[in-house]
Amino acid sequence: MKKLVLSILMIAFLGFAYAGNDDTKDSKSSTAIVTTISVTGKIIDFNTGETLTGVEVKIEGTQLKAYSDFDGNFFFENVNPGKYNIIASFISYKKSLVEDYNADGNSSIEIKLQAD
Image (cartoon, rainbow, N blue to C red; front, side, top):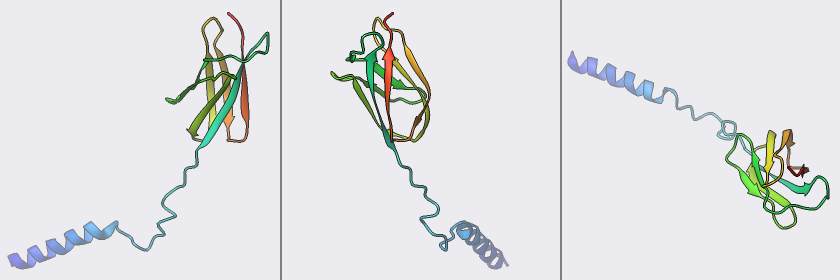
């Protein structure tokens, strides 16, 4: 009798163990392809139109941060497409907030900073 109960329990256990393992599914349908994009832009002075070097640019809600180069350009890699707030800050300038920037990989953003 013990052998019969143990056999039934073993079969039930194996049935539960393999119940969620459906090999008939297409493996591609269960994995989503995540495509990332890059976000580029330029920082300029509002009054003079000159480019600004060393401006800190952050994408709000992420850990992404970049600094503008000698030509005022900045660049982010591996950004998920979507809408973001972009914050630019620089010493002796007012912080600039670009709200709901649509990061789709096809455009560049120009941020103008005003002197404080």
